[in-house]
Image (cartoon, rainbow, N blue to C red; front, top):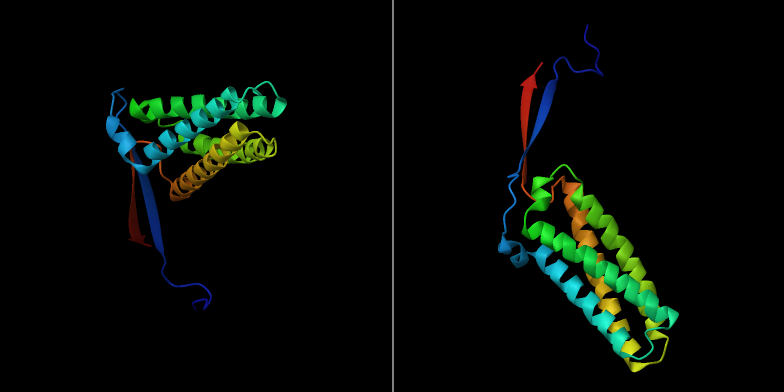
Length: 173
């Protein structure tokens, strides 16, 4: 007598995930033609523009200016190194490093830090600080959007560079 709550037959699905990555370092400028490459270039440009605005204000020594410049320069260098890593396929060579997680968390944290820095700059009532605040709010949006893109990629099971192929095999029992 069969149990009505348990089917007489069941199927087993086996999913195999294969990662294909070329582990040689090479220069590939095509990365800057896709959205993640553009986002990195935009973030670098906004970091640099905000930094320059604070520096030329004559009040760069004020604590809020120092904070803004610290956020801008750490963002500039970290994003610049990541851009170089992608251009030279370092991320593909070391595909086991969770690059997307690292980028997602960095971008999310930097969006929050830029919100604070831009608000502090906007309340200083100096024209150069107001311009820096504008670039800071734009950088906040850019880092936030890039964090969202990385979140979608992480949820989809993607890797930073290379390809990940999933194949499913269904076998009856």
